[in-house]
Image 1 (cartoon, rainbow, N blue to C red):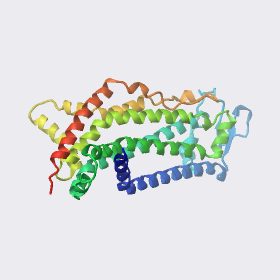
Image 2 (tube, one colour; image 1 turned 120 degrees about the horizontal axis):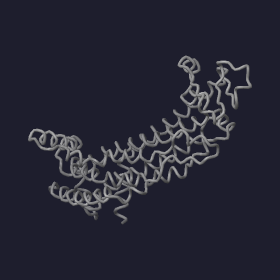
Image 3 (cartoon, rainbow, N blue to C red; image 1 turned 60 degrees about the vertical axis):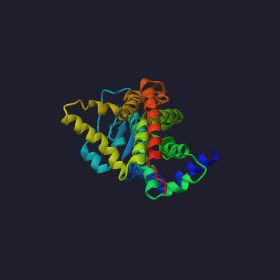
Image 4 (cartoon, rainbow, N blue to C red; image 1 turned 180 degrees about the vertical axis):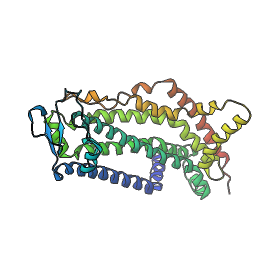
Length: 341
C-alpha cells in the first residue's frame, strides 16, 4: 500500500503544472464572473436606474429610467427591456425582465449548474490527454526501466495511472465545483440581493449542500460509465509506438470507414461509444427547475434531481464488464511491449 501511495503522489507531481494551470484558470474565471456581475449591478446606481418593487399602478411618476419588479402573481403582464434600453444601461441578462424577480434566481441557478458542468468538461479533456500519454511517455523516455527495478508491480503502476486519470479527475472536479459554488454564492452582488430580499427571496434559497451531494453522485456515475474509455486510452498508450492520442481517435474512425466500404452497419461503433452522450443525457434529465418553481418566496431550490438511480443500471453493469476485459488487455499490452535492455 505504501508503494502504491508513492506512485499516486508521483503521478500528481508529474502533472502538477497542468493542475496549477487548471486551478489558475478556475480562479480567473471565478473572479472574472464575479467582477462582471458586480459591474452590471453598479450600472443600476451609476446610470441612475431605479429598482422599484410592488404594484406600479399607484405610481404615476413611472418613467423609462426605472426597472420595475412588480407583483410576482401578475405573470400575464410581462414587460421586457428593449434592446435600446439594454445597450444604454449595459445591463446583464438578469435585468432584462421588468416584472418577474424570480427570473434572477432562475438565471442564477442556470449559471451555477452551467459553470460546474463546463468545469467538469474541461477536466475530462485533461483526463483524455493524461490517459493517452500515461504509459507511452514512460516507455518513450525509458523511465519504465527504473520503475520496474523498484519493488512495485506492473499492476500497481497501471492502477495508479488509472486511478489518477479517473477518480482523481472526478475528485478534483467536485472540489473545484464546491469552491466555485461557495464563492459565487458568497460574492453575489448586494444590489441584486436587496432586490430579491424586497420580494421575499434570496440566493440562500438554493440548496448548496444538496447540490454538491448530487454533484458527487454524478461524478461517481460518470466515472463508472466512462471507465471503459479511460482503459481504452490506457490500452492504446501501452501498445502504440507513437502518437497514442491520434491512434486512439483514428481506430474508431477507420473502423467506421471500413464498415461503410464493406457495406456493413457502422452503427455498432456508435453503440460502443454510447456512454459518452449518455452522461450528458443523464445530466440534463436531472436538470431541475422550471421558471415557475422559483416564484415562491422562501422555497428551497434544488438544482438537480437525484443521480443515485443511475448507479445500479444495465449501463453500469456493461461498463464494469467491459472495463474488466480492458484491464486485462491493458496489462498484457504493457507487459508485451516492454523489451528489456
